[in-house]
Image 1 (tube, one colour):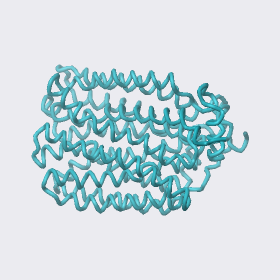
Image 2 (cartoon, one colour):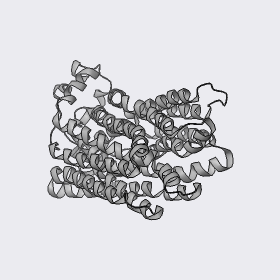
Image 3 (cartoon, one colour):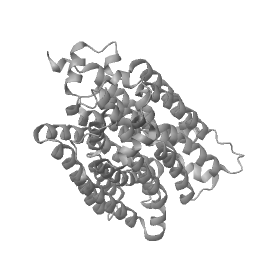
Length: 443
């Protein structure tokens, strides 16, 4: 059998998860770019705007673990399709904010909270897909490509949203994002299946290759696992109980909390930092703010490829844990340097290199949770991602408070300290561990 021929269907679906991720980030980032115009129209302060950003992240964080559990039980095909429709509704409701609303701040907090709840399923469901579709030694690259969608969506957003805002007002980008999201969701529903065993276009060679190199946990009767009544250990509470006592998953979650805190500085505040602190006008600020997401695209893919290569050569301790820890410490050092720079072009380049270093570690988080949890990868990675988004929610509110009282340099130094702690947490992770859910041994 020629393993090299067995690449087509799984990699197309990985690509479409990249597209879904890009659209989801466009949905969530557009308010950061439209935030200045929104704040002017409704007289919001930066702290009030931060509360709107935080509302999305709180909803996103709180529904990560339930969303992952649903993806494990119902499968990523249906869960992601339902999710895309949900995103569309609440993205549209953001634009539908009436000018006569008595409390626009409360309206936006509720809408963005519910949008976050719907978007919470995308990456746990994606990791559930990876656990059953992608052989273990390819998971670094697959996750790198999926999370490159974060950078792609964030890179497109400044130019896309700014153009529509200037010509049609701040509400227009939200309507366009809604239509775009529904379109890519239809393609996902038609093209995807929950496991390769169900897909009519997967050749026998590809299926055999996937089954040969999946981890044992992922090979535990993946088709029937989607239709069976949950056992006690498979219930939400039972699965959570197994995760919260696992040292590796708790360490990864702590590290991802630190990761999320730093990442969301760039998603929420970098554009505003360039325009209001470094004094760039709107179009120039939009151009410079594309540098971090471009770094995310490049480093997500290259970090995944490097992680896979080192894993094959030296094992997961080096290829997953070593790459992640080194990348996070490097990101910390770059953030310290970038915080001292007052030139907008130079600050953009240095700080973009920092977020790039951060995303060299991204695929390791998701690859290790898929390896450890197998058919419960959605739940485990949802729990981890909850930690990341709580970190993001904290930075959305805390960053402007620190900047207001101590200056923006202090905001970046706080982020640098946290991400260094996140790097050290990887030394507590056992990447070859298997989370032994009871139902896997019963099949």
